[in-house]
Image (cartoon, rainbow, N blue to C red; front, side, top):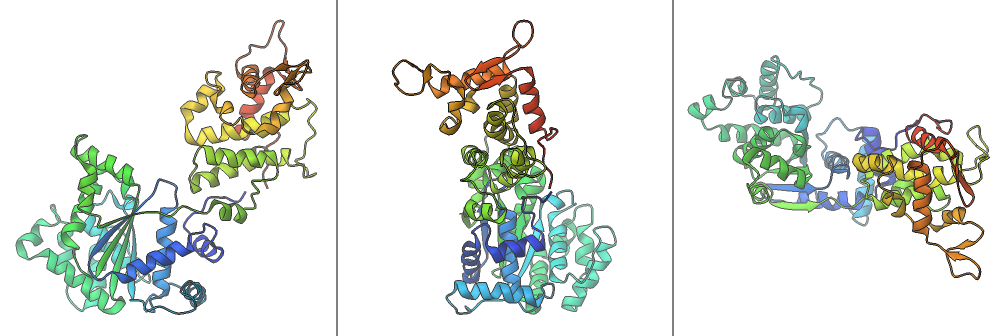
Length: 456
């Protein structure tokens, strides 16, 4: 089954860009314009929660920068032409003046076991500068990196790189020469051939161990203060503050500390969920199951990554069974409205809870918390199932007035709290009849081990 989650592969980045399936192309172009306007060193934080698409966003910005740089050999001409045509369209048919940007993507989390951030950061710059080189991240890197540096600059850089692998990677060079000058010369030499500015995208810093995160920030601040360098950090600022506090202590002012490193803080623009739904053929307005799934995504504030995972699970769990397709996964429910209610209403809620709050999910399925059902009682189409002949949700002559909340709680107790056996074999609530199999069926459906499980 195809994944609905957008991993930042080249194919996904291009397809998403061409169809603008997250509705962020205008934001990518606008951010590139900001980068193009910078004339001095700048450090920018792109803030967003986990799963909001930060990695995807910065990689697409990098893709646009690369398309505008003729020295980038890793992008094929067809992709470059398509990107630049959309870029031109955004600027109303004109090609704006654009500095040559050499761009580097650095995954901090992948490197947080390294001896020193400077070493892995320079390694990332080298690798991005020329992807024709395959550089192993082991001891051989010392000699290979020195050779590559010599290739770009014509200078002997072996001593510089060897010093990074010493017991104290920077101590030797601090004594012998100013490393700031050497690093600046190294970066200037690269930019002479590759572009006017260097943009380094630092991703996943908030996931690093506290020691590495702090060292990386402070090394960058100290050794990369070059007017031609821009750092773009894609981070969950709230989580990064927790990381900083774990290093310096709970009373430490992590927010002001981060202000030392970030000249600009920007929030990642919201994704266009409707465009994303269209890209995966999800119609949120037709079937009750889809209406419920969309309601869960909104109520639980699922990120774009979580929404993709949720909809994939929802499709596998019960989609075909409640969509009347006539295919091999279609079902006729013989138990009145019971299974239809469980699959259409309860399953989407349980799938959502498993993503956002496992503790609340456990309370729900163990009969301790009916509130998740009640949270969605505005989906009125289903509640006619529960009315007995003498009950009504409105003032009707001869009928007892009941509330949707009351009937939902009755249904919840019948599914999750009633001990069936002895004289109690089932519980009838309106057109629905619940028994000891109902809960087990729900658990199997949500676990994707039921007869309703659909795999295309």
